[in-house]
Image (cartoon, rainbow over all chains, first blue to last red):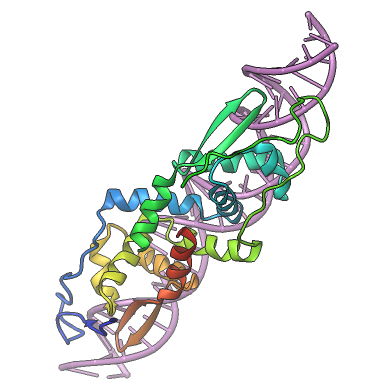
Length: 117
Length: 117
DNA sequence: TTGCTGAATCGATGACCGTCGATCTGCAGC
DNA sequence: GCTGCAGATCGACGGTCATCGATTCAGCAA
């Protein structure tokens, strides 16, 4: 499957000014790359990645008070991570009385998974 | 498929000290999370994500001199991004004379894709 | 050897990130 | 009202990041 096609500079000479006019282009456009990178960056932290993992495995809503004792960071730090995930559109939250419940919005993760394909 | 199971605190009372002993655990362990997050972080930048995109679409080796004109950053910045990708084990490089060729090591991306499911 | 070229590295700069303790905001029960 | 709790926000801190121009290094060719 992996064709060992080699993209070489257009000229063999090392001296000529016009070495290589680009013949290779990205398949994802800039905007899409920005969006995908935003999602990837959001899970680019071990705690946030594990948070998403927990929330995905429980296909429902999880109380924050269940999440805090799982990680060795302060409550404010965890809240900060959850906000990052919310800002990236990976999760959303819902308050019920005193407690806050978080759940996964599959769209963002699915987009990234599709690109990684 | 998505069961709307709701994980609530173990006690209904808002006053009691032992509100919620954790019953939900991450499926990926800490080490695996660190590794996956490292890969995600590496593609958590639009330029690096597009770099990986280009290299993946060309299932071969691409000359750096082809990559530089595709992005609106200096040569040193692009070299820095390529190094980040190399450090994360996503790509590797090979020099041939004056030119350097980069190519994808599918392992890292595949790991992340597998977790994203 | 001398000169040029492609790519990596260096040093600096300004922005952002993860973390913490402290504080603030709502809600529940008294 | 008041008190206590869960969670979000604030302010500060040290560390890391993306970016640049300048420099260095290795290879090719007069």
